[in-house]
Structure formats: C-alpha cells, structure tokens
Image (cartoon, rainbow, N blue to C red; front, side, top):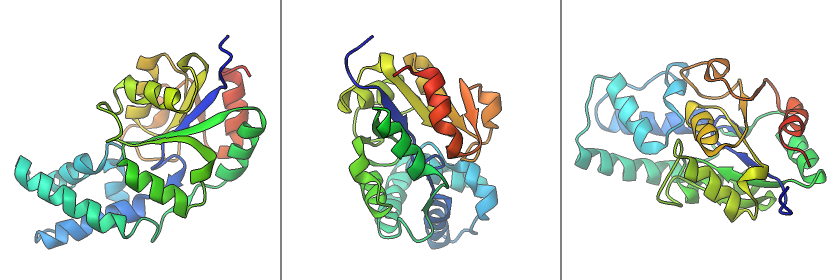
Length: 225
C-alpha cells in the first residue's frame, strides 16, 4: 500500500453543489440574446455535466439550432463572462456535504475537485461556498490537456493533490465521472441526485448513495485507510 494519503476526488456541479439554476439561467440568457426561447429548468438539467461548450451546444440543439464553430466560440465566451458574475445567485451545497468532508478529513483523506467547469469558475464558486481551502487540488476542464471522461483528468488530479491513484476514490453524478473513474481503475461512488440523462444506478458505479450522510461509510468500504 502506498505511503501517500488517500484521496477523495469530487465532481462539482450536481455532486457537491446544486448549480443548475445558475448554469441554466446563464444558458437562457444566451438563448434569449440569440432570439430563442428559454428552456425550463427541469427539462434542461440533464444537459449539464460536460462543461459549458457542451451545455451551449445541447441547449441550442434543444431549440433546433446547430452551431457553427465560430459562433459556438463567441457564445462560449459570452457564457463565461455572464456566468462568472452569477456563480452563486441560486447555487447551494447539497445537504450533508460539510459533515461528510469533516468525516473524511478526520480519517486522513485529502480532498480534491475534478470538474468539467473551467478552473477559474470552480475555484471562485468553491470560495463563495466556503469550501475552497479544504481541497488540496481544484482542477477544471481547462487545467490539463484532457478532461472527463478521459481518465487522465482524474489521475492527474489525484497526483496534483499529492496522492496515488491506487488509493483514491471518485464521487460524481454523471456518465463522464463513472466512465473516467472506471477507465482509471479508481472506484467510483455515484450520487443519485445530480445531473444525468441516464439514471445513476444504470451507469453501474461501485456504490450508489442518495445523501451525503451515506458517503463516509461508502468510501470506507472502497478505500482502506
């Protein structure tokens, strides 16, 4: 067993925090600017999980629009600018997050975030939610040359946090999280309350939880300390 500390890696949107209101709110601002109808929040939640470019592409596709690359890049920059000023209008931590992180840290885990959000927004959001100092690494879609579902996004996050992938666990809400973790040979805890078009149970994570109260025990069964 490695002498390095065990690492618990978390996705952000739909895992640590319910951010759908601000992300879809920003998408709807962009849609309206382009003369298109806004999408209802509940309909659009499942568009989340792969980053802002994918969200924009999916959002426009839902209105029957196909975006050319140049237009997508312009809208992506518009999205980043607006969203950066509205990170926490509606976003909140899921119940039980702080207590679960306390428990994991008390057991010797280091904590990290691996998200398909751009790194700057991830850091700013976690600062606003009061969590940023707790993470040994906060890694975004633009931090490395690879992002989820590429397994290197997770393994490099673990290494940046000072750990070894052989003593790590991923916690996430989407296919990208599950696929990346499995490809990296890292066990994955799926949460049932996030953003996914396919029910998390059907994605076959190693363990499924419905509330953060269940997380410490779930991780303890997967990663011996």
